[in-house]
Length: 54
Image (cartoon, rainbow, N blue to C red):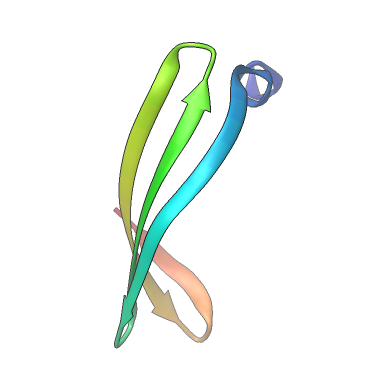
């Protein structure tokens, strides 16, 4: 099932990344066979690793 999703992705474009304290916000667009999918993700960093993703 995973290989289907990987083959459906044509490109990923990162538009911005904002870092503040222990959080990183990323805005990117995934170009898929289904169309463009805009994504805004919030990551919490702990000990230089992703501890949480929303």
